[in-house]
Length: 412
Ligand SMILES: [Zn+2]
Image (tube, rainbow, N blue to C red; front, side):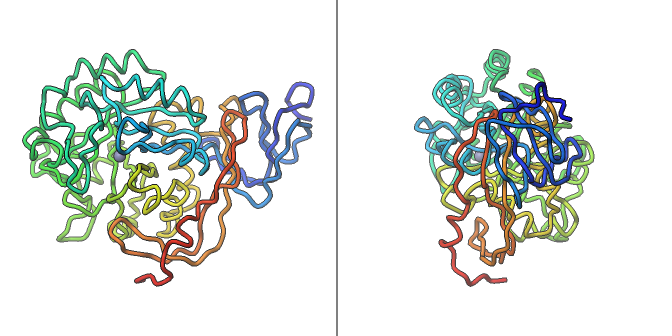
């Protein structure tokens, strides 16, 4: 007999494949919810509920977490509508990666986090205006760290301490394009390291076309990921630009990258508009260098391709051989732990918030592109069937805008 008082629940999701790496669950069965919390999981639960959902043939996971998106809509050029682009694709929690800094954060909280169905958490940019001008790609102007006057450790730490309900980390972009041709890069990196250390939160680094090396000649030197600490997050792991994780001469993952992983630095996908290369991901996969966290870096420049949504980016990693359980781990419990929320989200264990995603894994035969126009044939894809945020069901859209958009002529 059920543990649930009176044998009643508000919702039961039945007959799905419950896959929850955090709780060690992998079986065909049911999840019961009362109010906004998971109250029981098991096979053929002897419970009645106000609502039942038949998840036969579905994969049922904790609500997906997209650990790198840009959701400050209308206030930054990159901002997307998170309910339309994330919740509708099975993502219940998003983490905004530095769209706001200390002087612009309250708008993100009051106009987006407080008004969205999707749970929004955020990394605070070390530059006080965040990505207000977006100078990130395609030669766009307005690099956020062109002046060191806006990179203030005290302001960053104070803002995090006052807003720990939303802020979970610090973000910095290490790139010559946004740091006065690289002149400020090392100092901006030092300030971001210090701010995150003082606030006791992880630092997320974007590291591309940088003057700071991936592979250091001396372990005392500043390096990225070499200077990151356990729990810090290296995003855009599989980009194909200078500062790649792959040593171009040996075509192997740099030893400093492996060493950082051993120390507990987390490697995140952050697919984006320019940061996912099939060849880089395939070379890393050959060595078993899978991402700890799979995220989209979803923004206005890539949600219609090549990133599309989180299930599509998960599909890409399945296509290069990452095991399904690891793909689910990288979109549920690992990001939850990375942002200090594992007690609440990222698992279907009893007492966790009833954020639940039902997905289907189906056979297909289409070409899917990376950020450089290279295509690979994909034989299986994941798409969302339903999603519940704190026990409430929301409408989903099949993640297949790319199904018709792409040519059927891959180069491999
Ligand atoms: Zn980003």
